[in-house]
Image 1 (cartoon, rainbow, N blue to C red):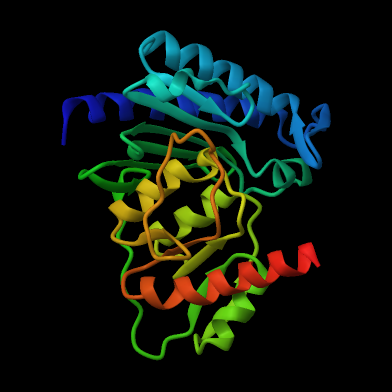
Image 2 (tube, rainbow, N blue to C red; image 1 turned 180 degrees about the vertical axis):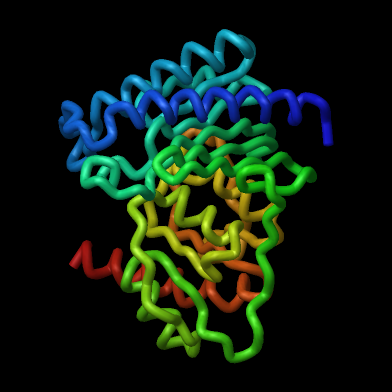
Amino acid sequence: MPDADVEDLALIAAAAEAAGRIALAFFGNQPRAWTKGADSPVTEADIASDRYLHETLLAARPGYGWLSEETADTPDRLTRERVFIVDPIDGTRGFMAGSLDWCVSVAVVEQGRPVAGVLSVPARGELFEATLGGGARLNGRPLHAFAPEAGAVLRFAGPMRHHRALTGAGFALGERRVTPSLAYRLALVAAGRLDIATASADARDWDLAAADLLVHEAGGTLHDAAGLPVRYNRPDPRHGALVATVPGLTEATAGPVGRAEAEAERRRQS
């Protein structure tokens, strides 16, 4: 793997862990919170984590672009060869409610794909890391996503409509796991704790990029409803419905999830 990827991984891992410690100091202490946009919560912990990551990462790599959930976006990032894609707290609602399933997500993206990615999950003492071609690790241990045995009950996390659609398509799914962080949900596929994790339409680059690399480097896939890989650092960071799976489930899962999202959109517009 290129030296730049290894060096960037060391940088973002240290920064994500430090940002996680900053956020953890607010966790369970009723941080100030407000609403942005239509109905998206943000807390002072999100802002403190974001500020630290912005200052630390761009001081170390001033030539890189920047895209974060909590920073105003600019088109400058589209002109940069490498871009930091950051969610200072993924799973803010869960963070506010006391769930342990929130994380700091940091990725380096080059030519539309992540080349280094980290999830720091401080409330669980977990650090996920990956580089392109260098594998994925959890607390230093290699991760491998294995194909399920024939007829196995599959472990699933995602919207209930996706669970119903996949069950209707013949998948034997166990009880749906609920986790408020999309990035962490996807990383659980890389960790071998889930077989399928899905995302509704409108997930953003910062929810996905680091977890995407983790899943792929562990041997799984993250794909859209057409079965195609996800591209990052485009002018619009929004994405359609997505599916992360262990090996052997990619093609069969994309169609049912895509149809479920199309039906949900039809109902919203009717």
